[in-house]
Length: 256
Image (cartoon, rainbow, N blue to C red; front, side):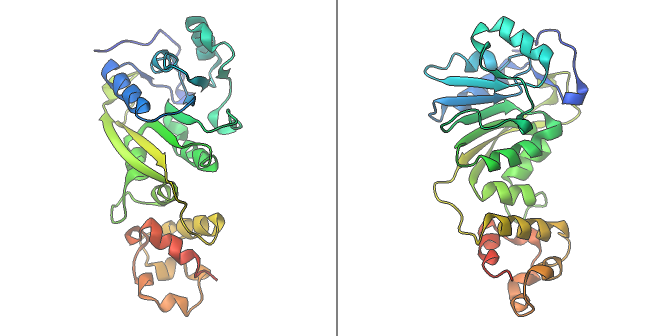
């Protein structure tokens, strides 16, 4: 069953594609319900396809962040309960919307989806769960494990702190207008124990440096970060995509 979003001016500059497939909407809402939470932030509510269901969840403090003034006006008119609960800004520019932990859900704008995940990482101690619709390629990268050709910086940095589950594919025909790419929904659940690293900064530097020249062996890609003696270890014969998140974490303690 498909329900069409209200007639809006579609703003390509904001990466707007409105979800219209009620079957997919229900699957996302069902996924949200699998975890318990009291605070919920929706990113990019647009025409309210998810919002109309989310605001009905019992006992939830709900907020939405929406950059488009036209959509904000429509949402407040259609759902008066949102009057003081919409943050009119870009998700990338807002401060933490709640003082206590909150779940994040959204059909994320594809043109900033990777930045959205990195913003979540900045808030990792406040965000136990994320359920998001992404361009399929980004969703796959976030969820992929070592040895996969799409495994990279995003995979390692996200999986250092979250268990990532690829939930389901979403056809481009589920949107109005249909994007040129396929989509996927993933769930991030915060790990109960933190990865043991020398420092978050060392970990990020190592991972980004290793994948910056991913076709080279680690020995050549990260030689600036280790002493010649350390580089003699056999692990440096591997390429970045062969190392697990835990491998990268362990290596941070050997950096010079």
